[in-house]
Structure formats: structure tokens, C-alpha cells
Image 1 (tube, helix red, strand yellow):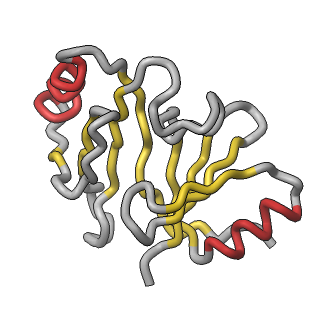
Image 2: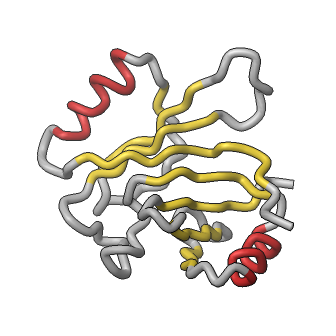
Length: 143
């Protein structure tokens, strides 16, 4: 059956978390590439970074697509393990049904892990790897 993907939410990129690294990253992503900072990013005092919006030409003007910058040296303070670290580089996809996505992953014996409440009280994110070490995040699309 497969998982019904309805959109690209963001791509997560990793930077180091030394003094000045966030500003250095923003000089490329914001100043040079012209992406705009999304002020709705939750406060993660232990993970520096930014959410940056961009619009695609001709795309529906719904939710903006984003680049998420995560600052961490080694595993982040939010990691459960080296593998289960939400700041690892990844692609985040919006899906029609997170419950259906979990069932599909289970039917294929794909190990996944869930973070609840990370980016908001009601948030739920499902993470898994594609078999090549690439991390994928799934979130249910807003109704």
C-alpha cells in the first residue's frame, strides 16, 4: 500500500555548536541565499539553530518549505542514542496519516522511533532510516 506523502516539510542540516557558528551559518542561508527566519521555532536553549522559510516558484502558498539548522557537537542533548538524534541531517515529509505510516513501517519490519512534544505539546514525529543511514522524519499533515 505504501505511505501517502503529501508534502516536503523541511530538510534538516547540521552545524557545530561553537560560539558564532549559528551566525556563520545564517550568513550563508539567510544573507546569501535570501531565506527568511521563521520566528515560530520553539526555544531550544540546548540546541542553537534556526528554521528558515523559502517559497518555491509556482508552488501552492500553503505552509512554507523550510531548512532547519541544528547546532550540536556529537549527539545533541535531545538525543536518546547516537542514532535516535532529531538533529541528525534528515528529510521531513508530511503524510496523510501518521497511524497508517506506522502500520506500513511495521509491516515492512522497519524500526522507527517517536518523539512526542518536541516541537509543541501536541507534536508527534516518527523517525526511521532508509537502510543506507539516511534519516527520514514523518509528521501528519494538518487537516
